[in-house]
Image 1 (cartoon, rainbow, N blue to C red):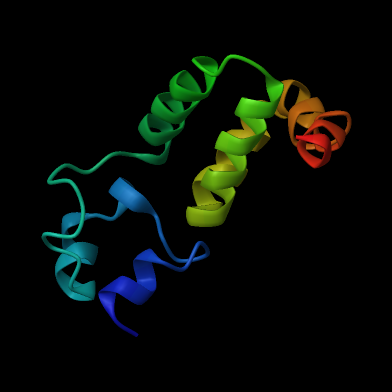
Image 2 (image 1 turned 90 degrees about the horizontal axis):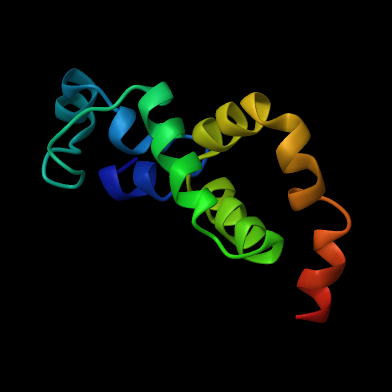
Length: 100
């Protein structure tokens, strides 16, 4: 499996949470920003970005992009904001996505 395969696999990709040792071992040096973040830091940054979205549809599209690229981050974030995210990720926002 190549470094690009890892980064393009939402089940394996951890984004900036790959440690320096993991980056070296997996050939990810130069393919990620030069800093390492914990999952907590990633989640806080992602949550702040999501909060800038104008409506639930934009929030859902943003969260689905995270889901499609980094499942670890998505599920960590979702588990910490379950009550807030449920109506965004599931009904009624899905109906808005279909109509849009």
